[in-house]
Length: 147
Image (tube, rainbow, N blue to C red):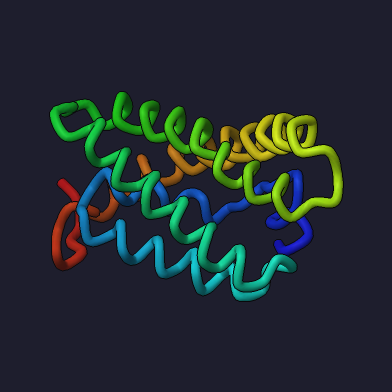
């Protein structure tokens, strides 16, 4: 999915995994390392490996903090969708910084385009993870059949 994963328009199925941070804090590090590994193939190279992974770590920690006292999974997922969409400003900053165009117009265009991709990826991902959690207990240390 590399053609859709890097650049101004980013539609990543892997963004679904951001929802895992809602279930257990161990997923924060796992997803962050997964981003670092995936970004090895990024055209931006080491910049994307470091900055993209840092953005993911900050974003997932923020999601855990904001949902700490929320018990409803759907509400948690909506918060995660909003936070990840908003946090694409960090990726927009990266794209604007490495781009050879006017900074502010590039930043705003990149934030809008990556934000839309994130909103779509996370919304589809919320549905997938919601039903996956119904089948497999994602909070458990050892995956068990839910119910």
